[in-house]
Image (tube, rainbow, N blue to C red; front, side, top):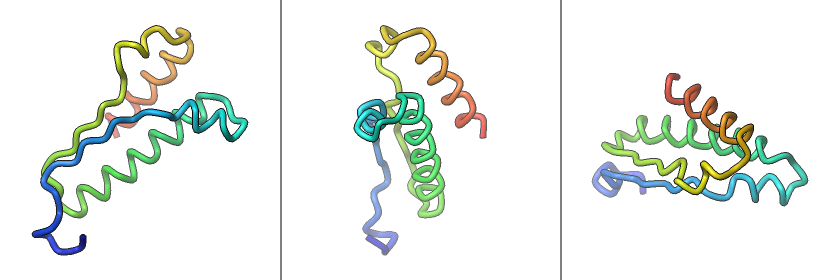
Length: 85
């Protein structure tokens, strides 16, 4: 897909599996969240470059509130940092 006519107008991403990704690599869960946020940053820039009109990110489900408070706080800080920038 390189021609503008073939690009979608809307892309939706469900951000899931960052903790499992980290665990599979012997890394702490927070590292998975960091890598996921960085990936979204790259995707966001690319969507803007390609003039994708809408990008939807499903980043935090109601079930995520049941995670340890420290992990939830970390994810909230990540979201805040990336949304502001």
